[in-house]
Image 1 (cartoon, rainbow, N blue to C red):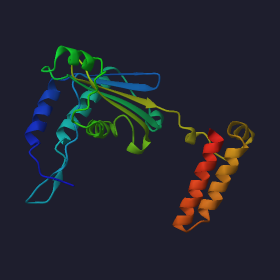
Image 2 (tube, one colour):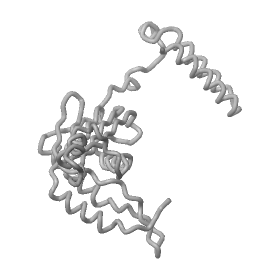
Image 3 (tube, rainbow, N blue to C red):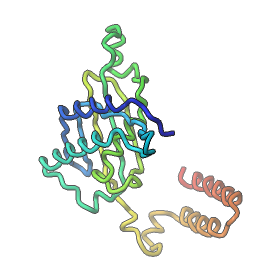
Image 4 (cartoon, rainbow, N blue to C red):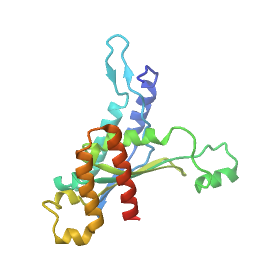
Length: 228
């Protein structure tokens, strides 16, 4: 649900803090590494203007400024991700780090720094993830739909930081075209090919939603038996 809140001043402070932050990047082994010496700002719910009813994202300027910093680092390091790679399936790993409360006893602080005591306080991890994905969309990949794997970690450390690793995966969809050939038969095996044929026929010819779900459940059980 959209809400009116008082986050604007907080966001302004984050934008000011971002100006002092450093962003570094590197690209190797089909992975883009992004490091920021600050924790990325959590997602804020969109604001609604009471008079006009228009909706705005409080983090728009922050996200644009962070994108600019990433682009600046990519340019400085002469990192260019070609059109084919940037459209591949994506695996993303994110680390969000902040300092533990200094008011804690030394014993607890020690365990927090080792992440034996976990960082279970707010903000929620999904709010860091939302901002990160928004910033990287159209920059590190072409479309959010390419992200097929996501790992995120919220941790304690001696200083604030954010690390994001974007891995560009091989896209078999670009090369596996045409009919099933002998190489496919060897690679896949007859059981999975037969299952795919059955899935294509039965789901296509089953208009009833309940029956379609039952067929899908049966196919899922068969796939588990084949792949395990």
